[in-house]
Image (cartoon, rainbow, N blue to C red; front, side, top):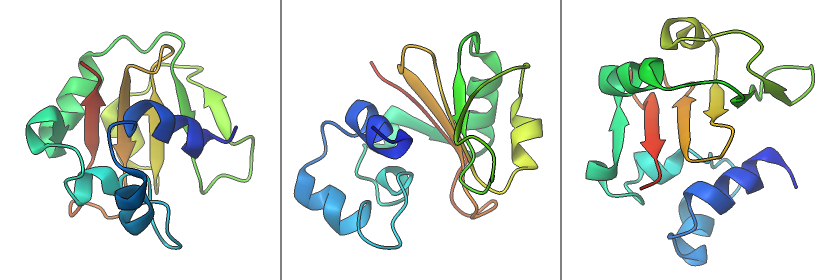
Length: 121
Protein backbone atom coordinates (compact mmCIF):
# COMPACT_ATOMS: atom_id res chain seq x y z
CA UNK A 1 0.00 0.00 0.00
CA UNK A 2 1.36 3.42 -0.83
CA UNK A 3 1.78 6.11 1.80
CA UNK A 4 -1.08 8.31 0.67
CA UNK A 5 -3.59 5.43 0.70
CA UNK A 6 -2.38 4.31 4.13
CA UNK A 7 -2.71 7.91 5.35
CA UNK A 8 -6.26 8.19 3.99
CA UNK A 9 -7.20 4.86 5.60
CA UNK A 10 -6.24 6.26 9.00
CA UNK A 11 -7.04 9.96 8.88
CA UNK A 12 -9.93 10.16 6.40
CA UNK A 13 -11.90 7.01 7.20
CA UNK A 14 -14.94 9.06 8.33
CA UNK A 15 -15.14 10.92 5.01
CA UNK A 16 -17.42 9.49 2.34
CA UNK A 17 -15.79 8.00 -0.77
CA UNK A 18 -17.71 10.46 -2.95
CA UNK A 19 -16.37 13.49 -1.05
CA UNK A 20 -12.85 12.04 -1.08
CA UNK A 21 -13.04 11.54 -4.84
CA UNK A 22 -14.42 15.05 -5.42
CA UNK A 23 -11.85 16.92 -3.31
CA UNK A 24 -8.89 14.68 -2.48
CA UNK A 25 -8.19 11.74 -4.76
CA UNK A 26 -9.11 13.38 -8.06
CA UNK A 27 -6.33 14.36 -10.42
CA UNK A 28 -4.55 17.34 -8.91
CA UNK A 29 -5.88 16.63 -5.43
CA UNK A 30 -3.80 16.38 -2.27
CA UNK A 31 -4.49 14.39 0.89
CA UNK A 32 -4.29 17.60 2.91
CA UNK A 33 -7.41 18.81 1.10
CA UNK A 34 -9.37 17.02 3.82
CA UNK A 35 -8.46 20.10 5.88
CA UNK A 36 -8.48 22.87 3.27
CA UNK A 37 -11.96 21.83 2.09
CA UNK A 38 -13.13 21.34 5.70
CA UNK A 39 -13.95 17.67 5.18
CA UNK A 40 -12.73 17.33 8.77
CA UNK A 41 -14.44 19.64 11.24
CA UNK A 42 -12.28 22.72 11.91
CA UNK A 43 -12.47 22.14 15.66
CA UNK A 44 -10.77 18.75 15.24
CA UNK A 45 -7.48 19.93 13.70
CA UNK A 46 -5.02 22.78 14.09
CA UNK A 47 -3.47 24.97 11.42
CA UNK A 48 -0.76 27.59 11.18
CA UNK A 49 1.31 28.38 14.28
CA UNK A 50 -0.98 26.30 16.53
CA UNK A 51 -0.24 23.27 14.34
CA UNK A 52 3.49 23.98 14.51
CA UNK A 53 3.36 24.21 18.31
CA UNK A 54 1.37 20.98 18.66
CA UNK A 55 3.77 19.14 16.37
CA UNK A 56 6.81 20.39 18.27
CA UNK A 57 5.32 19.08 21.52
CA UNK A 58 4.58 15.55 20.23
CA UNK A 59 6.79 12.53 20.88
CA UNK A 60 8.26 11.76 17.48
CA UNK A 61 10.03 8.51 18.36
CA UNK A 62 9.35 6.07 15.54
CA UNK A 63 7.54 8.68 13.43
CA UNK A 64 7.82 8.54 9.65
CA UNK A 65 7.69 11.19 7.00
CA UNK A 66 6.94 11.36 3.32
CA UNK A 67 8.50 13.98 1.09
CA UNK A 68 6.79 13.80 -2.32
CA UNK A 69 9.45 16.02 -3.90
CA UNK A 70 12.33 13.75 -2.87
CA UNK A 71 13.93 11.39 -5.35
CA UNK A 72 15.07 9.21 -2.46
CA UNK A 73 13.09 6.54 -0.66
CA UNK A 74 9.51 7.78 -0.37
CA UNK A 75 8.78 7.02 3.28
CA UNK A 76 11.53 7.51 5.82
CA UNK A 77 11.93 7.15 9.54
CA UNK A 78 12.52 10.39 11.37
CA UNK A 79 16.21 9.73 11.88
CA UNK A 80 16.58 12.86 13.93
CA UNK A 81 14.29 15.13 15.82
CA UNK A 82 12.62 17.35 13.25
CA UNK A 83 10.75 20.39 14.43
CA UNK A 84 8.27 22.55 12.59
CA UNK A 85 10.98 25.08 11.78
CA UNK A 86 13.02 22.46 9.94
CA UNK A 87 9.98 21.17 8.07
CA UNK A 88 8.98 24.72 7.09
CA UNK A 89 12.07 24.69 4.85
CA UNK A 90 10.73 21.74 2.86
CA UNK A 91 8.48 22.13 -0.17
CA UNK A 92 5.87 19.69 1.16
CA UNK A 93 6.09 17.07 3.90
CA UNK A 94 3.77 14.61 5.60
CA UNK A 95 4.70 13.27 9.06
CA UNK A 96 2.85 10.49 10.89
CA UNK A 97 3.36 9.02 14.32
CA UNK A 98 4.52 5.44 14.69
CA UNK A 99 1.00 4.33 15.64
CA UNK A 100 -0.70 6.58 13.04
CA UNK A 101 -2.64 8.53 15.68
CA UNK A 102 -1.41 11.96 14.62
CA UNK A 103 -0.18 13.65 11.47
CA UNK A 104 1.53 16.92 10.63
CA UNK A 105 1.47 18.26 7.09
CA UNK A 106 3.45 21.13 5.62
CA UNK A 107 1.84 22.00 2.30
CA UNK A 108 3.42 23.66 -0.70
CA UNK A 109 0.89 26.50 -0.24
CA UNK A 110 3.16 28.44 2.14
CA UNK A 111 1.15 30.39 4.72
CA UNK A 112 -2.02 29.99 2.70
CA UNK A 113 -2.97 26.38 3.48
CA UNK A 114 -1.46 24.79 6.54
CA UNK A 115 0.55 23.56 8.07
CA UNK A 116 -1.96 21.18 9.62
CA UNK A 117 -1.82 19.02 12.73
CA UNK A 118 -4.47 16.37 13.32
CA UNK A 119 -4.72 13.88 16.15
CA UNK A 120 -7.26 11.07 16.10
CA UNK A 121 -9.44 11.13 19.19
